[in-house]
Amino acid sequence: MEAPQFKYGDRVWYAESSSYCAVDVPCDICFGKLSVVLILGNGEETDIECEACGKGFQGPTGVRRTHEVRSSVTEGAITGFTKRSFEGGWRFEVDGSSRDHVFATQEEAEAKRSEMHERDTGARARMDEENLSGKKKNHAWSASYHRKHLEEAERKVAWHRAKLSKKGS
Image 1 (cartoon, one colour):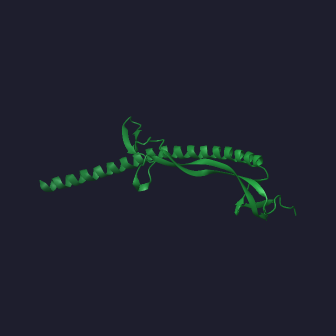
Image 2: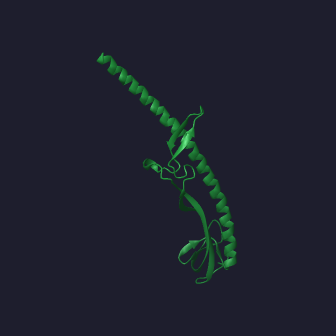
Image 3: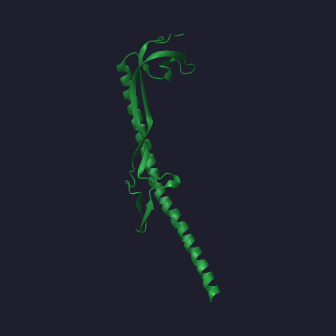
């Protein structure tokens, strides 16, 4: 069995990267106006609430929650380690927290951080593009939904008016 690379108390560097750090940004669909103009196929324009920055029943806010990539290199002390059964190698605890990317030098950790940051930045860009595309499609569905229900309500109002006018005659 191979010995662990580090011992208890060794000073090490570890790299981390995450593409799920929440941040609020101005809405890139309505630009803070809380509504968008949807142009229908017949050229008719209709103003609808922005769903990209909407939060359920609260309606649009002009601000959209998104995520950004953050990465870092941190120094710490080895406080534990365990043998990985399936992946092989060792998993180290640094200052009491389990870490994946542990290195003897800051330069090695910085190289790994840079690699992970680039990978996560690409993944985040793809996720943002997919989310934006979906939000744009939701506006068309929303307009169709509300127009359908408006037509149904108008038909019911016309029917009830007709019933009242027949009784009053």
